[in-house]
Amino acid sequence: MSGEKELTNGEQLMAKDQDLSKAREELERWKKMVETAEREKDKLMLEKLDSDEAKKKAQQEVTNLMTAEDQLAGRFNDKLKDIQAKINTVTKANQDLQKKLQQYKEQLKNKQAETDTLQKRFKIKAEIPEKRMRFTHIEQEEDESDEKEAQDIKGVFTIIQRPSFVLKGCEALITFEEEKVADQILRLPKCTVACDKTKSEVKPGTITLEPSAKFEVHITVSKRTIEFSNAFAFCLPEERMRDRLELGFSKPSRGGGEVERMKYDEKTGAGRITFLNTGVAENLTLRGNFYIDTPEAMEVTVEPSYNYELKKFQTFCGVPKRTVLLRGIQDVSDEEDMQDHLEIHFQKPSNFGGEVECIKFISNGKNLRAFFSEDCAEAEAQ
Image (cartoon, rainbow, N blue to C red; front, side, top):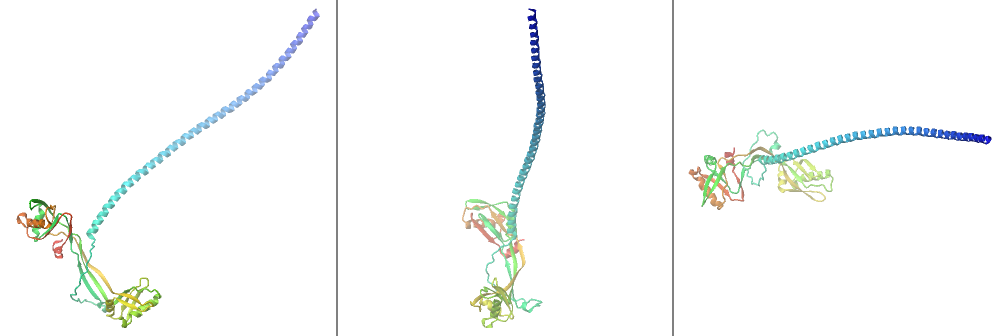
């Protein structure tokens, strides 16, 4: 019985040893697992450290990017403000330039108006009608050094432009025989003129004559030189055409004479010929044309050769002392009737009037240019 019991204890010890071996094996296994877990933990810790560093780095990069973005945004806003300020400056400058341009346009318009007025006052434009000339006498010039020049025909013409004034509707011009009468009328602010059953308030005033001119035209007509035209060299060279012209104008049988010199322009077909003797040029200019021997029998036009000068040019613009302008006349009757009423009124000494030399009234809607004779202009215009 005791032997079986001891055996059982041995078995128990063996069983304990086995359990202890298993426990050791289990412990080793757990140790290995712990070591593996520790390694994993260390690895995870390292990875965490790496991720934290990367996170910090990423956060720093994000912070840097945000800072850079803010800086760029600030710079952009500054640039935008500068650009907007420049745009505002340019816009204001443009507006100022537009205003100045408008001012300059207004000034230019005023200057042009002033220029037109000055041109009208100081520029003389007159159409001189054709007039018959009458020879009066010959003046012997002193110190005639050149006999050929003394043979030329010289003429002096005096051109006098009559001063004028434009009379408008419901106005009248009245000229008195005495200056003092016109002065008396001009001192009055207005005159009451009776016309049939009505009365007209007339305002007297002075007039300024439009600019007029006086000058001399000195003309010198050569007795030895003529000018010709329409001499085109269609089929001949210029030298041969020149020879044909000189040969043709040298023939006495055709009215020509000995040629002293000649000028010819092939492009214009015109030229000038000076003869040795007088008389030839006069005869040819009276004929007006001349035939030249060319393959097509050319006829050239002959004209006198002359020079002219303007001398003693004078302009004047004055105020007549005996003439008064009447404005504000009521157009209530016929022109002649109103003119008679005005003349009767201003002839009466009780109305400060006097003898009337001439008077002219025109009705509404009309214009009339009144001319003043030369003696009146010289005596009255200052």
